[in-house]
Image (cartoon, rainbow, N blue to C red; front, side, top):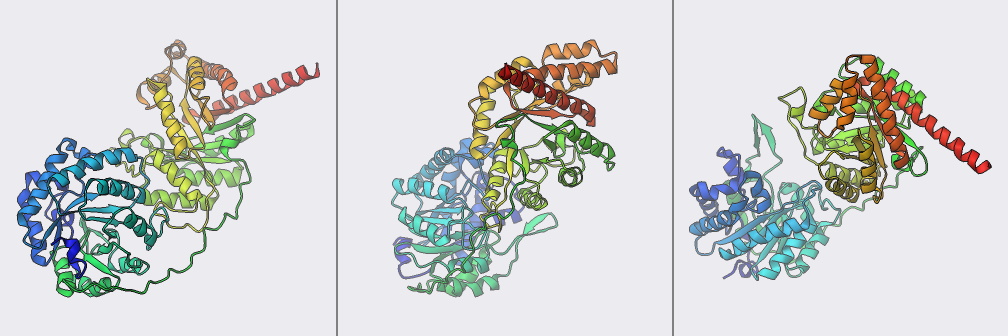
Length: 619
């Protein structure tokens, strides 16, 4: 008899976590590879869950797909690992026990750039492996992204008539991260062919029950629940969960009352947790009706009540010249020179002061602190860089909330230089997000939503810039990245410094079709040594040979070298001004007098052009 047939009249018990037990045994790499190297270990865990009362066990194949195995160099072992996973599970099942082929979600709890086409290819390969190995059903679990789950469900439904269980993971009670209500998502999955719809991971029994209380019994499908043991704790260098099996036993009946017909466990659960469920409700008759708790009426995300007093950065260049200047925050606690520079640049006529985020992975005074001060004390518009390197997803969200609260709405989203570039070799790079994903997250803030789908109570008004590195072998590939960043929400671009008139012209030709403006980067060189260092050692910067030769010719005289650097920069500006309305000046080593002079040079040239136009019209 199939397990779906049994579920017509009884509640079935599923198994619990596999990774939690393997982790507790000291495994901290690819759990699925153990199907090949330590099959007896996997077999023992399956057997323990069956002895605890599980009617269904899932194969150790959660992350056995091409995209996830590639992290371990195992992308060519998809068939071998999945086949072995089913074989191990089959070797321990008894009469009346079933094997579920497990496939985990790929998109996680953050915006990811993995395309649906990549997911489809990876999913199909794993799906065929499990079907060929003859599983009793499929378990599609830990899907945070409903689009992804619907996509793979439809593929699976076309390929097999086996029972399919689909399980969503939530960050917030009752809603997915894209704001879809849980009851609506279950209905959509049922309509696309899921036999069982439910929840797993992230939530413990308390919050999972609260979510399920808002869900009516499906018309055709059944409900499942695989709660976590608890919230995890980090103790003595290890992730640990509470081991209170009695708490699980007490929650068994409430799950039954919510209409659950398949109950198991996720992270932190062990055979003891499953035994607690089995002892309480195994083979219990399912409830056939329930009262659905109506969710409290939420206010819609309120329309922003604050308004920008100035145009966004991208709008400054629509009809006029705009100049933004980068002035690095100091590496020391003394700030007098920095603020003197900010004042001089304001007097020169800049439109915004851009502040890097620990550039070259070197600690500096926090740029948001200086941005707030230059804005309030000097009256300069700050443009704050945000790097993905130093903050995890939690820190980035908190940082954005802080910037919004301070009234700092202009942001440059960058991936950031790896930590090993800087002078702290023991520091680690976080990179929870790429620059694409950070742009997307910031734009989600503008919709009043956090990455998890939680309402923020107010809509942000961030203007989001993105970085452009034109110093690549094939400029077309760099432009393709810009097009992709526009799709993710970039409002404008700021380029790395360019040191060739020919390159400026080429960049203009290759980017003039873009729908958002580019602020082209210009940086005055101060010495031959400076030019060689930038060219050879700084990621993303290349300097034309003839310019390095010009700087080398005056290397004996520091004053002449600085003047030569300004001459080169002005020549580049002459070309850039004919092609781009936005100019981005980079200040070397806090020598703000150089970028102040270049700002004045640009303003004076614009005035001269205006006078010439006026004179021509008068004549």
